Length: 594
Image (cartoon, rainbow, N blue to C red; front, side, top):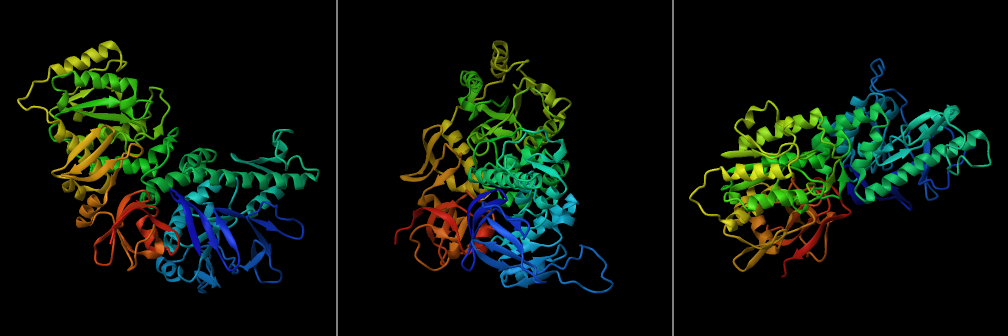
């Protein structure tokens, strides 16, 4: 039985408990034979069982017999003979790429470990490999382990885990060692091309034969990469690491791009809504699932404040949140001193996020990314920003648009910005640019309406709620008022506090009073089985879950009668909550007292 403790995008860390043995994931099995011992640091050993009985997996001194492989290549014509798509022995299944979705659903309760036969052949075709991996990962469910034999090398295991594998082996490393290949985190090179002294690992320093030294070096390179991946996973920084490693090989870049472009739903569903800071230093970052989710929600879950008819387009800043930077403090000073300042709505242009409305500057990942600032925009970045801005302006209407950006070439030949005033010059923060911005604001005709800052603040908080939970959250905050000073805000309705804004994530943290209103709207609810909620809610106690729920979402727990039982933070997505029988599903913050 598998219990997952950590998740970072599509990769997870946990422990599978068998009959007298435990296997941490992600992990690698190292082969052992009469000619070669597995290294002492091996998380598991793969060995021949003798005779024709296939292979044994040895974990913690316990031997587990693996089902035999057919050995028939995928797509091979067997002259009318139909090869079964799966074989099950005890609780371990060997499956072929041709297995159907219905077959996987039918057997995923009968096996805990699934071995993909023919992985080496599939790996040669990135299109087919990615499609097969994601389909099988989805098909076998969250509670089962996917073992991918024969393809692991130091430079590619990150992407293999990212594609859904939990368990790999070092058999390909043994094969390449016999071919006299020297393995590194950036690929494989002939051993003869490696300069003496280039590597200082203990394998290369062994008092042994050249073959033994090379094998130990290659094993260590694989194990070291595994340990790095585990470390990145613990800090939830694995996607950035995968992007760096993908650049070592065209085939790895192809796999990551295919996954990002063709299967975004697979990634998004498994990607937490809150994460750590990250560096967006490659163009692969444009396709990060958390980044794409942000861009999509700006267009589908966000409305500009109703009384703000002046759009001010601004550049991003190195410091986050933007409002704490010196440049944005200068912009805001000009705005606050203007007679039309209360009508100004600020929209920050940045890569890889595209558009960040000012009131969402705290929301993950708007204050959590870092990019190299060079003044140069790649064509795909320009295209992304212009497509987003055009769609945004089709949804959100303004009477006046001021572009205070400093690099207006990014907007060249865009008809949707006809009539916009450009004020920044070469540097948005220099004295003349700020004067031009002030003059542009002062030249906008005044209206009879007076500033209603309470209404605007409430609209901004409502926007945050809609961004977080969807359009159905809009009506919940009618009649509310906001207390506090940005960014420490509390939302109240009468004498009841409904929520407060988390400065760390930009999310609203609901009280039980808000959770009751969310339940009435059927927003982000988890239905539990009939028992008393004492501490946190574990997966075994979950009956149903709103399919919109992702790891990190603020959710409500309801009982069998539909009444509120508690509120907290989701530690699994909805599908995993329903499928799993072990692990924490919701970290409960508030419980309804009986």
